[in-house]
Image 1 (cartoon, rainbow, N blue to C red):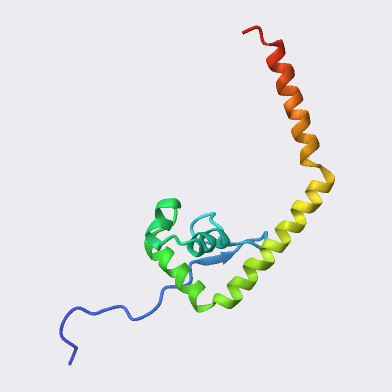
Image 2 (cartoon, rainbow, N blue to C red):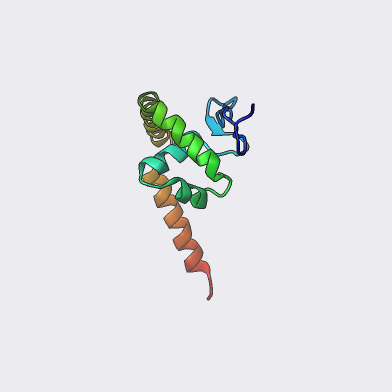
Length: 120
């Protein structure tokens, strides 16, 4: 005899994450990176706030991503730290190759030249 009342689905949906060819982990159906969503969550945004900040993110997906993070917090936090280190290294290499102070000075000089030559 079947249980009374409506039947409920008791299986989990697949994890809404996929590793792209570039190595990034993104939310399925979007171009959003996992690290961006988790960082926003760690900064205090609720799942509802995440969906407002990232319209491509549905509320069930936001909860699924956060559930994944909470179940794997140590591994995800380690992965986030590794991404931060890689980013800092990349920025350091970029700054060595193209120092921003020099670029900023060139842009300001060009801007000043353009303003000086503008008759208005």
